[in-house]
Structures are given as structure tokens and as C-alpha cells.
Image (tube, rainbow, N blue to C red):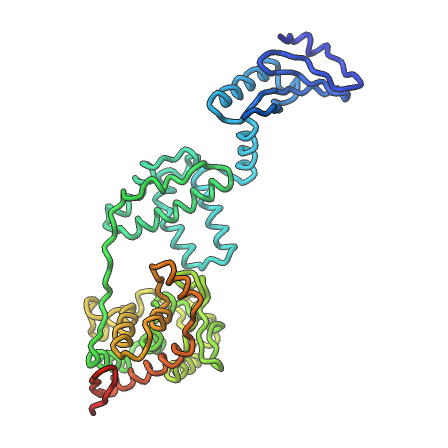
Length: 408
């Protein structure tokens, strides 16, 4: 067993030598005069050594405490060298609280091109968790604590928001695991603990005669011209309202008659192309005279640097006399899906691909991802625009065995 006097009196030699304490602890004396504490131990059948600091900064008593702590880890089946390495990785990564890791992940998403709308949504979803345990080390947060934060949404009846918050929180925990600040994703423990959200069926008009009435009502809209043009274009291209609101001029290829929507704007995070019929191109040309000098096709009234509000189109439909249980901006997708399928001229795959739906079957999803059905979609979108013109004019459409007849 070492004594302090031995350590003080130890002089350097031409080679390294050791002064042994007990239970693997020793002092390594270097030719330079440095005196370094080492713990020799075996783990998984291999001989290893752990640095415990330098004397006199680390005293004999300190070295023995560190040795005892390391031996407790060994008794629990943990390699102290690995634990030390993970602690260094975590320290290099930054703070270890849930808030620290969440902020890092959000910043990473923005660097990688995450849409501003998505980043803001993720931050909003994480706010209940940050309020509940943001200052706690992320590795110490428990599943019941996360569930308590999720209940903030559930108690307000926002079951879908609770589900999405759990998903984003899981991303934070997995990022913490990758950077050495947590060992597991506790959000996985909450499977089945949340109330399943009910599927929302957004109101849509699908009867041809009523669709024609809606189109005529939109044409007569006397509010903002950009709002009227947005509704007219929504009926033609039937993209999601958020995708329409965030449309940028740089995405529009007038010469090629195509709208190239980037992945960050799409719900499914993959790029999407929309063939533009002649009627769509005409609307976009009219729109360019109004907003072509800015970034967005449909900017907010208060600032050209932001897209129009998410409530604008639905509010316009209310002004036209359509209640929320009759028609919504999202409902144009249902209208198109229903009537295009009823035509019988187009393959289900082409329609689903144009709607940018996520195929649930994995095999078909891989197939749909690689198959564009582009030629059919181009033809279909022009036929759809022509069909809407016929409905707008008041022609009655009768469908017999997938063949359309017009009756004036």
C-alpha cells in the first residue's frame, strides 16, 4: 500500500516505473518527472488500463475514490473506459439537458434544409416537453414524464398533436443517443398509451352539378384577386393547401408546363411534379402580373416575405356561403380523386401518384416511388381542367360505361 511520503520522494529514472497501491491502482512515474495515476483491470477477458489523473492535482485519497468508483462500474458490468469515452463525446456535443439536445436537433434540421414551417411546427410541438423537463439531463427523463407532457395536448382534445409530439420527441431522444447523452428512446415505451386520433374527413363537394356551382362562385369572388386565383388554381392542381400557399416562383416552369414542388414543402418529404394544364398556366400568368416580383405566388397581405395565411382559402369559401361542413380548401383533393376515379379513364396509380399519397403496402410503395406515370398524368391533368370548364359552364355530365356524354 502506497504512502504519501513514497509518492513525494519518488524520483524519475531513465525509464517508466510504477509504485503499486492495491486493487489495481498504481502510480506511473515518467522520466520527465510526471506522476500519473493508473487503474489496471480486466474486462471481458482483456487487460485494460484507465487514467485517473496526475499527482499532485489528484491526491492519493482522490485516486483511491476514483478507483473505487470504477470498480463499482465493473461490478455492474460496465467498462469504465467506455463510460469515460462516452462522457467525453457527450461533453463535446454540448449541453446534456433535454432543451439543449432539442435545440441542437432543430438547428441541425434547419441546416439540412428543413422547411421553415416544419421547423416552427416541431418547436411548437416540443414546447410542452421543454416546459415540463427541459432543464433535466435528457438521459434521466422517464417515460411517465414524457406522457405527462403529452397529456397537455390530449387534455385539450388535440390527439393528433399529441401523436406528432411523441414522434418529434423520439427524434430528440434518438439524437441524444447518437451523441452519447442518452442510452434509449423512451418515447417507444408510450406505444398504446395515447388516445388514437379520429380520422378527419374534410368536407368536399363531389356531385358534378354542385362542383360547377362552386367553380362559378369562386369566379365571382370579389375579395383579394390573389385569393380568387388561389382557389381557381387549387381546383385545377388539387395539391394540399400548405403546398399551394408555399408555392414559389422559382418552382414554376412555364415553358415546360410543370410545377416542381421541393421535398421540404411536401407532406411526405419527397419532391413532387404537377403537370400544368393550359388553364393552370393562364392563371399563373395572370398571377405573375400581381406577385411575380416576389418569392411566393400567394404572399401574405401584410408581408410579401411570407406566404398567405393557412386560413385564407377556407375563410374565402365561407364568404362565398359555403359552410365548413360543405367545402374546404383541402376538399378539392377529394373532389378530384372522386371524379377522376369515376371517369374510368385513368389508372388508380396515376391518380394516387398525382395526389402524392403515401402507399401503405411497402412493395407497392417502392413501385409507386419509382413509377411516375408522367405521360398519363399530363394527359389526365389537361382532361381534368377541361372537365372543370364543362362543369363550370353548366353542362350536365352523364357517365355510362366510362364514356362521358355532354347534355347542354
